[in-house]
Image (cartoon, rainbow, N blue to C red; front, side, top):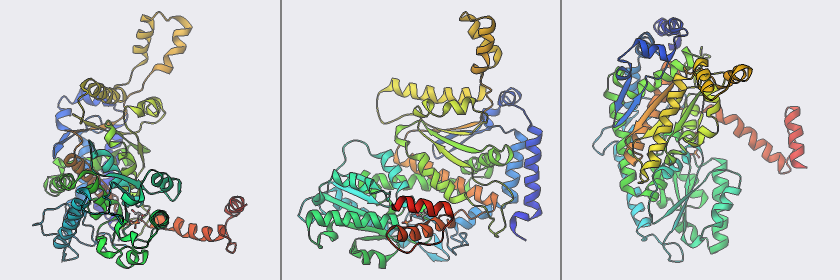
Length: 545
Ligand code: F6P
């Protein structure tokens, strides 16, 4: 019997359904009216982050049912298994130990029983030493000039995390400009290289497998560009380093493995920014900031590991997501950071969440009996307000929003920050409270509208309200806080995977497209035609003509 069919877990799911049924059409406004202590009871704090869940459509019975499900799914013991380095990524027989990457030297993590902290800090120390050499101008290019620009070539987890963090944290004058190239569309690498001087550019080829087609293609193009400019094979050693777990492939590419920074199979790609994959972050913002990022994540790890479930922020975030998806049937999750620095957070979370929990079978291989992840999307406030918020306010379906709101930002234009905060708070208020036909009638009448014109105008201006959101308040967007925020979402994903009884750490779903692309690529380059469906065959012919 698979775990998802154990009676205890199914009884808990039935309680969730019953709680949802009992909640029925009770609105958020009614919940607030009935529960004077609601805000206090539904505010959860950890590592300086404060999350207000009171604008979610849950009542006490919903929460009881959710925490009962966490209990029935043995969430505490799964958390313990994660931190104990057990092979919880069972389809690949691997431990999942990203918390070890941000733990202090004296911690004693082990993956499948093998201690890892020595290796982790050995690599971290090499990253630190290399970062200092490059940032201080002691690492020279082939012509003897100091490095001014760094290009990280990688995709997925080897791009999204470092790119997002760099965009969030780079501020003020820095000795290095860090660029990112991920897309196999060579427009990106061509544009980036066009602005660079080969003699002062360092490429980091970042790929856990060192077998990802897009990354290898971009790395080869970068190498050809560099050789074209500097013209000597010996140049590669001074201008290319690698971050990978695949020693042999790095050497095959022509990168000196002395300039390779390793990591391990127990680090998932989308959980890897804390490893040497974060080299671009360290180069961009300095090692001290990178260590602050790690420390912020470590603080959230400790909270997740030790806080009782009812006070545990990642547990709350995960359970509320489960409620919105499985009890209320809401079809997507929107992420809106009110911070320019966090512009790439939604894209980063798309991989973290959808590659992790976008699964259709349980750990035991049976079809999942209920919805798992819903689509996740978003953009920064206030820009999103002028794009998709119309749908959030008046579209036919409520979509839950996570508002991420820093109290302070790294500038002193106070009145604009005040406007930003006001906008964020106004959006969550509007989504929840709405505006009734009566209120609209009053407003329009005061403006002199009457009769048929008034009646025709009213429905268009009504806001149903009752649309749920969570607001996560950050003290600011610095390295430490960002580390905690990212780790919060990582653990949220883990919580949900346990409750849905799925493996959050494999990604077989990306393989089929890769295989077929290889076949089609061969055909497009003149190889023998292969059997495809009629549509694909016609499109191949169109693209080849
Ligand atoms: O898209 C699939 C994937 O395997 C991701 O999980 C991973 O982050 C990305 O490709 C890049 O992989 P690699 O770091 O091995 O190049």
